[in-house]
Length: 198
Image 1 (cartoon, rainbow, N blue to C red):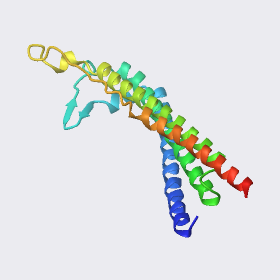
Image 2: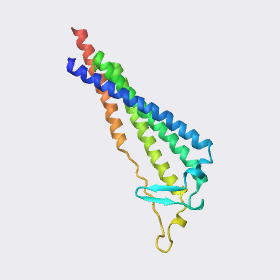
Image 3: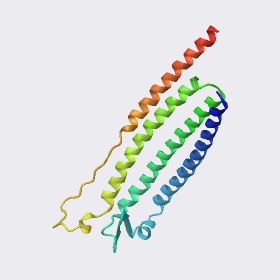
Image 4: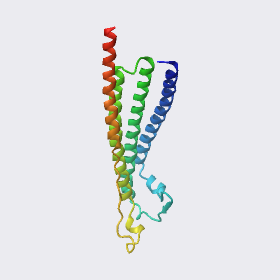
């Protein structure tokens, strides 16, 4: 490997290290928020007197329009699922960093690179599933927390629909990375055969 490629991989490792550190800090903060909102029920009475939805801000005069008991169930769960998602990103970035380090020190056609690529495919698959679960929970929390009967006049608004959009593109990406791991393993076997022949 030439010096230019090594320099590029070093820069990439440095950036991945920063991203990994940010993910770890975010994970710890999200776990802290999850525990805080789980064990501190009084915060729902003081903190959630209003709710902002894009450009619309709803200000509640009493607790009838906002189901704070349901919010106390959903909000910590959303923080917990987000923390799991961030941890999966942390593991994926750590795997990428390992691939860069191995490639910089040895050759890309190595058994450990192939194994790391398989792990990366698993993290992408797990991350996609967790992200979709988070999307469903977010919509369910919004749907069950707000009392829409008080917010809208039933003469004009008779039904409110919530669309849950599932993202499935991660399946293709995970499959491509998994296939790539087999290509790297095959390249390693060819290189080993070439070395033995020489």
